[in-house]
Length: 336
Image (cartoon, rainbow, N blue to C red; front, side, top):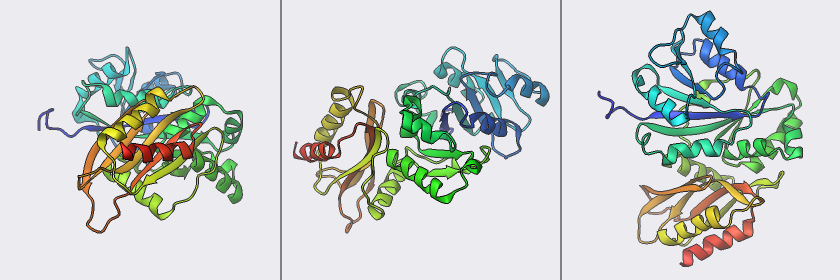
């Protein structure tokens, strides 16, 4: 099979504030025999996880590309040199040596900006697929960050497809856990919480989750059909769900979403994520709406079942969201 016919490589973005446990998780990925071939790209090569001593201990050696190291457990470790795109392009020249890519961000990074690279870069299109965004939070300190409105932490939670609540042993009380999980769910209703200790996680829970696939979007919306409830406000980042039983026009939908992301966004009010299923007029197919930061995509998916209600349902995650205004905007988009 040549490089043009190989399936695209799933990429997972790993983010989390300083001290959340990324270091421990990366050490596990790079040293333990978990049976997966993962290429790890670090933004701060060697500084956080002591990778130079790890490489020396492992006996790994770099080859044609500086700072690319193959480790004894089958994983590859490399650093961002000039920019992420060029690093990924170099990595793809050895496509047969790994099955997954995990991109680690700095503790202060905005994962939305990183995710947008996989949507707009034509050089990577078809060869790499954004699989999901995984955010680690510290069970002991996350409540303080939420109270202090730490911007980086809020955005990392808002963009997440999985939230790993690490250091669970430091929050043994079940009521405290339920309270925290409720706060996180109120901020991001799309991301399930997974409790971990010492970043010990089954890697199948964070790899190949297909968070941006049409099947996953439909499954998420079906879950909201079954468990519909109002999302309570936590901090200034919230989730809200809007719906409409009448079909929309593609033009009306795209104009409305574009206005939300580009014209109406302010420092105090902006949208981080959108996910939903849309009913389009004169079309028997479901359309999937995905949005990250200021980018969005509307694409056709499977057909509606004959007896299935053709209901548009959208989940928004953002800062300063107005549920009533979003519902009104959806209704007006349908009338366009």
